[in-house]
Length: 436
Length: 97
Image (cartoon, rainbow over all chains, first blue to last red; front, side, top):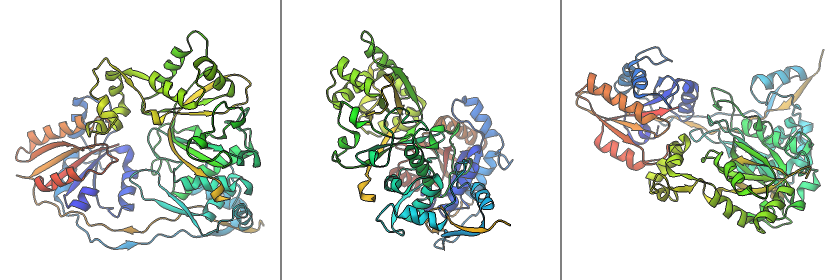
């Protein structure tokens, strides 16, 4: 779209057929509904040159016309149109009055829910939620979008409250939900890799609202954990203007973490290290929520064995996709074992060790598809540390991750020393106190 | 009969859409230079090489240039766009998945 509209070069965009609705929708919201777009079958990845030549020689699976005929016509047939016209889009404050049953059906039909029962956001319920913050209903909290190429949608305190009510949250949770909304990190990203988010709450707010940092913290065993995370998801999909499979959501397998965005409190009281939000510049008495995106992969084990714990952890790390850096979620028992076995009195020392341990042969690293898609181009562009990694000999062991992308959080109830690694990307830490 | 209730709309506020003009199309591709722009995702380069071969076989008067974007598709690439504008007449970008 940039080269067509910004540089005046007639262009045809090629896509795979699964993305038909998405790319047409993206072109439309970018003011270019007539953009020439031609489709070939999915997938491109892993196809041989001969198979891909057959795509070129074949037909566009959407239009049924020869691919190259569509390409040539896209560059030569007139499609010029006037620029400058603006189309306003509005969102009503209220939904037309109806019965409770019909409204619930309408919310489902419009894809405003996560397909679980919701609490209907009546004016009274929304007003009660708004009482959970001193912020004004009309204040803009933030903006989100489901993908890089879509437009940002904006939402106010009231819109966040509406989604919080739908999720079943209580007014005292509202500052945490507002802080999540203020991050601007969507919990309904549209990556075909089927991403979810993770939200970690720190500080006094955890105890004030009854969040769970212990036994079952990441499961359905805390009203606050469950509904705050659900509200974050609903706010994301509705605040950004949708998360509909085939249109604005393309996660291939979906991700059950998305039901409540893995929302939990850090077990600060039982952790041997400083809390996560303190590492990110906030005071111990401050309350904050930290979000991670790209949550997909998980590895787990029990404790650290005396003889081979280093190798075991190394294997777990190498089992992760190198494009999804590790966040260690340690039960306090496992955290203390890292201190006892490894001498990691500070969390930073553990992260240093993880960085040094997570290595693989350069040739293997560069051959990962996601590294080819997202890291290799940046390496060839000269971005560090990847440009230096690219100079490594094929058999040289190189770090899988950047040190700053590795994180450690303590959570769990010490029923045993199980721990896991979540492959994900740290996004942002937002003050909860600012939204009280 | 069940009574009716009023509820609030949960969706955010979209921005205005500003219509953008498309570039004027070419009268013909004969004798023109078409850039095949590899967005560096999955095996797009292999696909575009096949398209380049198609042009060589079926429309040899069209000059094609296979060009990789400088970095990932998420990053704007004005240097490449300037090159295409200066040296080319049209572009084919791919492959969006």
